[in-house]
Length: 44
Length: 173
Image 1 (cartoon, each protein chain N blue to C red):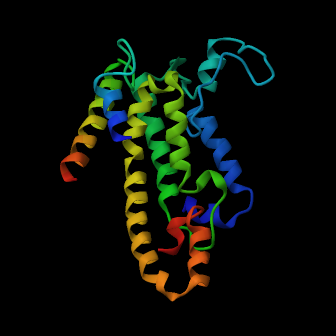
Image 2 (cartoon, rainbow over the protein chains, first blue to last red):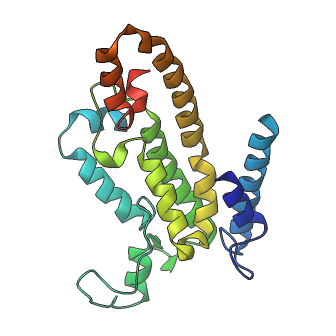
């Protein structure tokens, strides 16, 4: 599930489509999700 | 406080959920709001559509809040909702909208709707939902530990715990 989200926020869910859209706020939130997942994975 | 009222006052859960939907649009469910009402009537104008989607209008300037303000407000409201999900009820489970498994339903629904995923709020809400999953994981570990300890006490206790496991795992920890 984490991998799925990670892919959604890094690679995207389609051509130029990401979780959270492309607005500045969306990008900020996306990076927050990405960092949190990396943090979780670092602990495991 | 919200939790205490939820567990004591009858019909309050429904009212609160309706209020949540009114304030933040379809996000507590989450649900993508189409361009028409449930009876097939199209939204009269952009104003009505914005209002249904949870945008708030500034009475003085007569303009809608920006996307950034919208995201901040929605995240704040939803964080309260997510923290209610995390509280372990002492007097038995709450109404179905406020039980912990709801966060899985929320998440699954969000992933089912591509249009929702691409909204700015989605990523931010996903981030604020994270403590819920952490809580489930910890409950599960504690529960499995408890389960392995109690198992030796005989089949009666075993089935009792087993039957309640899916519904409200957090209650017995």
